[in-house]
Length: 475
Image 1 (cartoon, rainbow, N blue to C red):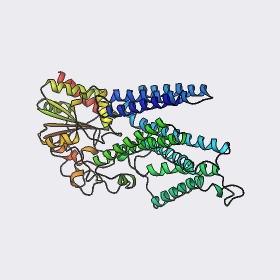
Image 2 (image 1 turned 30 degrees about the vertical axis):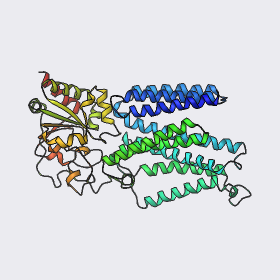
Image 3 (image 1 turned 180 degrees about the horizontal axis):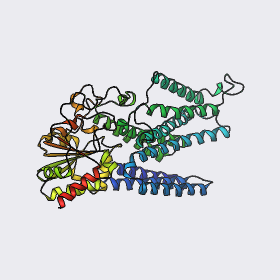
Image 4 (image 1 turned 90 degrees about the vertical axis):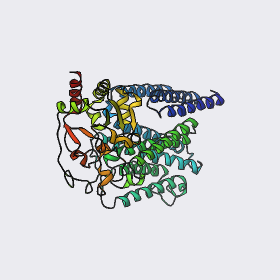
């Protein structure tokens, strides 16, 4: 294929990526944006394969078909409650793919005897590709384990942790420098006879995998939305570095787009939590010792309410704000919530949904769930839109949300959540919390909202409780 045509197709692919990302910025156009970006990636892959003299076409086809089948099955079969951990795994797959690209390119130079004459800057890029890819892969696996609760969501902290991490980073940088600039020092007749460039690369890969684990284990479950977006950025940067390694323009562009958009999203998530990225990565949020215990400093007691008693409160309400959280996803209650909202609207009630930026366990989690249930997009309100008028809300329904509605974030300086912007549901005239118990949320921080004078606790499975209210309205 002529190089001019290849570059033209790459430009078209890049334009589709940019346009697709733009469409992803709105809930009502996100699905089309995803499709546009997917078409751009397919065009880029086909162009890349057609432009090179590939010898092993059968293996390429096997990989393309198997990957497409796995992706289609994952999209169709993975439950919405498992979407955050699936995203984490996909980030990891992108990281390990980039690592392998850098590794194979180094292997090609090493086997052909071209390593000694290879430019030092190209070898540095290979080292960076291996580094970012390794960190992304193991970091994403740990994030997957925390999100799926196969690993404890609490931070893993120990004495001298930052010193150990610093030593690992120093060894990694030394390995990259040895591979790129210190090649005369390596080999049987050199200053370091026990090391070869290939051995150093193996050490670099192993240390990068270890660093990925070390970076994520100190981060608590409450910070997982930030970690997901950060690892997504890492996977993009790894792909960009891999593009420089194999000199592929469209891979550089697509990786840069993913990396930069991931960083922007990470910054948005940090602002939504009123915390810096360094605080998220190194503070060990949720490690214990700083959380508020149920009843400690709280006045009053939890006031249970039944479905039958909650119904007249909703039936008489002029306006209702529904605040969903991860508990709604676990109960798979989004369709029942949509039906209840429709029935309340038929009863003359104004219904809106208050969406916190870090509700759920990945960015946009609640928006995806509610869109699946066909909730109108104009009813989805951001935190900054609902808080100014929250005191005019007759009833706030908190369905599975916890940390994002915790009033201790405003008033209790001893709470780990202090300073984090939350949806101020406690200022509504009446609050009904759908929850199984008074246990703390994923961040491990107890919630004084449950003991508020205007709060009623509707204990039990959220889906069953919502369906009970739907039955009351229908009757």
